[in-house]
Length: 206
Image (tube, rainbow, N blue to C red; front, side):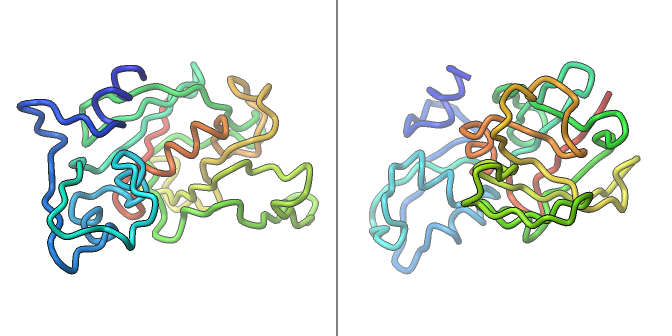
């Protein structure tokens, strides 16, 4: 993660780096459209370039861009998520929590849903029917929600699963969820800023 912070998640651009580069902002450019062109979320360009307000982007300025998209691979047996840029460039690993035996996290290939990235959305408990809101002290989704749709393997056709933060940090590294992938709140914010709806995939393997 230290290497990723110096290389990827900073304004540094290194010679011969084919995955990151410099972009000359043109008149009429918006951060969202620039990010879409490079297949990354606008949030990560805002963060690494320290842009406080995207609407103040100035023509003629240079910003760092990343050639995406990012993908993730989750290993159920070791409660680990590996993050990759494009298909093969390893970025960093995260510890995760997964579904308990009766509601296990399905293996297979998932894709980030088109409307899947949300900040502290209301959440209906499918078992009790209770609706949780972000102001509730026991709100279970933490800082971010990344909704997934199953596209291959045991995941195909499955919905309702996602990646989210948690207030139960002791559950990270265990099978304690209803099937979703749990992360520490700070780490799920980083992942939220890197995964792009409709393009980024999450593969779950044993």
